[in-house]
Image 1 (tube, rainbow over the protein chains, first blue to last red):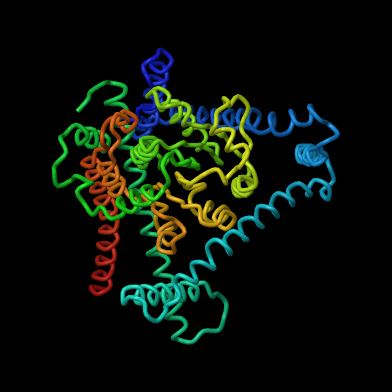
Image 2 (image 1 turned 60 degrees about the vertical axis):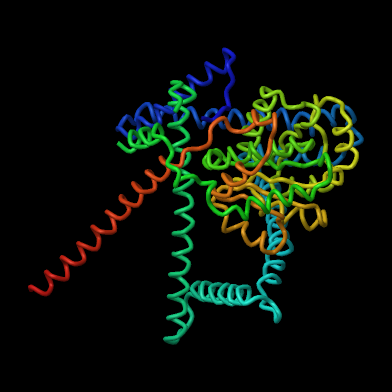
Length: 214
Length: 267
């Protein structure tokens, strides 16, 4: 039972709509693909509408339009933002050298934040934590050694096109199998999440909608 | 047939040996200890970015954590950096309002664009959205930004979760304690942060979540938690069906290989 809906008329209507759409999606399991296709269009449309709504209400309005309207000369950086947005929107009709500027800035800044954060926040602290130090517990030492060996083997598994001996080829093969095992474990977690989602939807239909409480 | 089997399992009473909370409670204790270390009436920034595909798994634990923080007289400011997270945050805030949670203790900071860049923006200053009612808490957040909080609680999803907070916010905020609730699929990603001390506590499996829910004392705020505990029997039935289906595929391949070997030998 999700408990996301209350008891007002609008909540009851929302519960019925959610139940009908859930049945439509589950109906695809029985081969009813046409209505399921419509529900996919509905989801895409609602998602796009929601994104546009929060972009206008929570970003463009309060953070761009209103500050500019209040003080047009005092926020020059926002005019630069407007120019970049306009350039991106008009990209199909502008020369490639010009239209590439906003995309380059977006990709470059995102990569810089992600890479810098990954190195400072993850890579260096994790390397530091995985270094086997004298005086640590046996379990920590074994864990650190195993982590280092697995990391090394998986990295070797990514070597392509290099001359290899038998030992290196064996290490690369082991690394690839370890990688596949890791992905398999991750997919197992994902299946569990999806199963819980399916059970939750069944609980929603039986509990929230039909009121067939246990 | 699968759906019918799961629906039937949903109706059956839970067996005692299937109680998730009956297992090891070490991780739940770590979360409780981390929250106990916070000062009285803690001010907590809640990074609410679960995704719809995995939220069903963590929803009961998320509700228990929010109720637990409110039961500790905490003040919660909720912010989202993904659209799905914002939609779910709106729904949960509306649910808390229906449950008559103290509105003075909740602050909706809305949606911030830019994902990781948005997180960096949060570390510089926090702008209150339009329409936020004046309160001491809101004034403090507007004036001191991230410095006004005693802790960060991240509700993670596949798009954005504790990893991004650890990478972008932790290096810029020093020793602000951080706890997290994540779906199982993110556990391999965040577990090293617990071992490395970057996260004070993580609830990342249904079992740990159930143990935590059973351990919290919410008092009259019990109404803010999940009305019913999630059913474990239908999940077990689903896992068994999945194993049977995957096993059948594997068995078919093994049998084909054996037949091919026999055919070669016979030839």
